[in-house]
Amino acid sequence: MPSITMFEHQYRTFHELGINADHHLMEGLDQLNQNTGRDLVVLLRKGIKATQFVGVMRVADTTLQILPKIDYGVNSDPDKPIDTQPHRNAALSATHNLLYMLSYTQHLRIHEQDIVALGKQKSDWLELLTRLLAADLHRLMQRGLVHNYIQVEDSLPVMRGRWLLEQQLIRQPHVKHRFDVRYDEFSPDILLNQVFCYVVDFLQYQTRNNENRRLLMDLGEWLAPVQNPAMLTSSKLDQVLFTRLNDRYLPAFNLARMFIENTTMTLSAGKMLNFAFVFDMNLLFEEFVASFLQRHRQSIFPHGWGNLQFRIQSKGEATYLARRSPDNASVFKLVPDVVLHNLSGVPLVILDTKYKTLLPEQRKLGVSEGDFYQMLAYLTRMNCDHGLILYPQVSTGQTFRQLFQIESRSERILVATINLHQPIERTTALIHEFKETFTGALAN
Image 1 (cartoon, rainbow, N blue to C red):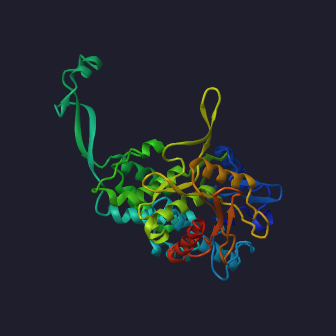
Image 2 (image 1 turned 45 degrees about the vertical axis):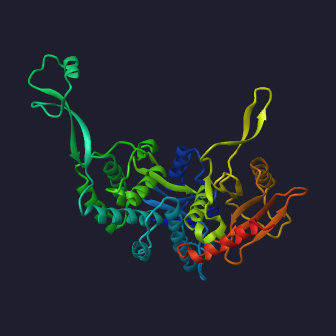
Image 3 (image 1 turned 90 degrees about the vertical axis):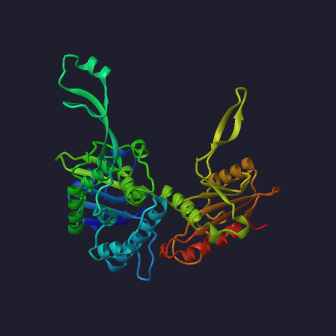
């Protein structure tokens, strides 16, 4: 099956991609764009341009993999011709970093041996994630499925549980040899297993890796007593409860949920299933920064900040910039990415992430006026003196930091980059960068 690898915001001609303008991939990508209401990729007259969406799109027998530019290594270059060694090195290292970013944002459990094994087979990113889920579930379910009591209503020839007499008299008063009853049954057909059944069934049709297919077939047989739901919504997934009896399944559930919530499917004219499994890097960068700070807070922040509290995005009480007269309605909602505050609720630092390119050679560094004024509005309204606008670093090298003092006011805004062109699983360097960045943000 043909597989094409591109990188975010990258343009490639049809000649570079090894296809022509009327290739079935173009029609399938157009359908996926229409189905999502967003340009997952931009289809141009002579080629394809990637956007901020990264992941895997499959159209019939062709896979388009789009990776973020967070590669690392001496001989790594995503802009080199496709299938050259520097391009392959960039794809492999970017895949590693993307998986570890997701391990923070989606609370996944990464098994390095699975990544290494699939990396040797030049599998795409979807196959790596499929292996992580299938291998994890296979290890867990070898001991048997999780069971729990579920409530069952049935019409039986014998009495069992509670007799629903009123229901029976209304529904079938003439039937005397059967009883409408409600009882509890210890069963594997619970919502958690239904989620796994749904995802395992989907992935069996999508995987092209023999070992993944073997693991998924085993899981499909073990999950045979479980009902496969026609559809699962986020609100339904929220109903899955974890206790000490089943919390070992939480990482696998998080990965299964990620598959469900980030997959779009369409049917082509030939009734072939096209799908896209993608992430918006703007959101992923924001969520990764917040998750990394929370997990490593003790190593990043000063000792006196032991009781530091995080408010992430819109969680918590909404804050508005102004009130409209004369009805006194709150307007211009303020939603900073992260607010770091003390136990009394006093903001110490307001952080906003921007997945954009910073241009240190320019006077304003390439920071848009809108982004800068937005941070100033946050600081003014929340009565905070320290703001941080954080960008990804374009390439390897020294991170960049520039402090701005607001004229005739006490507020300071630090514009900085963070280097993701390094192995994210080796956290020491990244922790040090964040520590220095916050030291700069809090400078008097």
